[in-house]
Length: 340
Image 1 (cartoon, rainbow, N blue to C red):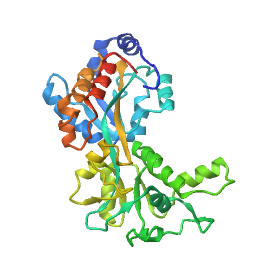
Image 2 (spheres, one colour; image 1 turned 120 degrees about the horizontal axis):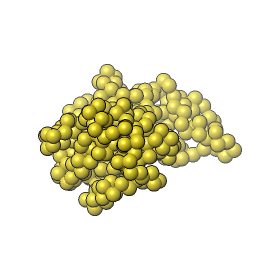
Image 3 (tube, rainbow, N blue to C red; image 1 turned 180 degrees about the vertical axis):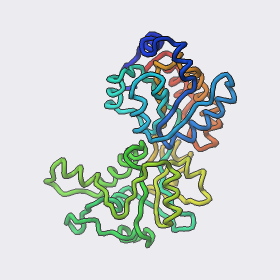
Image 4 (cartoon, rainbow, N blue to C red; image 1 turned 90 degrees about the vertical axis):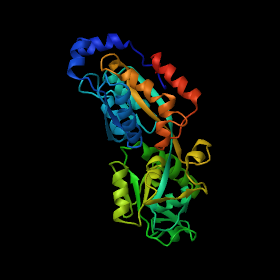
């Protein structure tokens, strides 16, 4: 973890809730929210956990995006706040500070595997072989053409590069509440922007605007989960959507995936470090709720068990790319020791 925020769960729980027993009576179900990428994995674990531990109620798993989930998580402690936030990126320093300011001083990071970010389109449509610079040129509000900075003139993909399909440009990307958006920005847009080059003499603000301002005529920002992106593709077959690899693999009957820098996204290419747009997945546990909300510690241990998130486990069959067993053992040991 980025910083040490450890505190005694028992002492904090009693201070925040009055008595453990009273709080347990007001809510005895684990509440989870956050990343739409992690949502299907957490939902599977919740159901499996309920079957394996019938003494605990089935955890309630919601979405809302990584940013939204962490915002809820950091609102404070107590029965009206969530216990776990799912995240498709690591928590930011500013979010940790917000947690601390609201009294959430025991934040435990759980990394449980990997996922890739893919560009998928209608299975009946053309094949795409994309690069970050092509994607940047498709979505940037302004681009350089023949040495001049102009409003983006590209209408079809093949106007950007003759190797791309003669198809209208339309991209459905995650909105800013999603961790996927930040990884997309960092590993695709920023990489493409740097490759595209820029003239000298621009201010820092001008450079940032060129990199991060997207055109409004072809870019659709999706604040909901991947099912909303899929619905957009179903309504407009010309749209290329940004998805998590695991979601794409569950919808190969209606979607086809683009290569990025010549690499086909798959569990194998992500695990090998060959596919360029991949990221670790996390969830964050409110340590102050452990021992107060029944089942949190058992849920974490169950989630990290070999049969659930390990090689050949339940989540791998659902699209998770398992991390090395040694990493999982390290994460679990740190959680049980109360490390941040």
